Length: 86
Image (tube, rainbow, N blue to C red):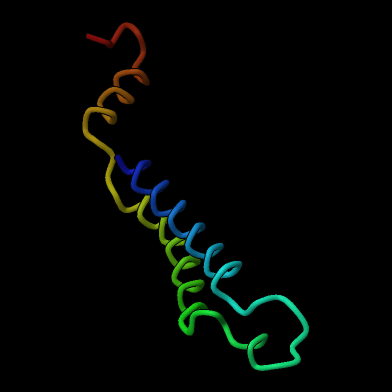
């Protein structure tokens, strides 16, 4: 479950950062008028920062969300020597 949440956060953060950088930021071209120096959406820089933060917070979420007990038990069972298994 934590892998799914982490991947969703990672994908969402990357998509938000890319969309705000490429589609919502200032248009490409010579800065000959204010149209080329102002972003298309006034909050585009904040959305970009939010996307980057979400991307980095996905690693924190992965570390803080506990694994399911069943997967931990299966891992512990597999790491035991064969003569100790039930």
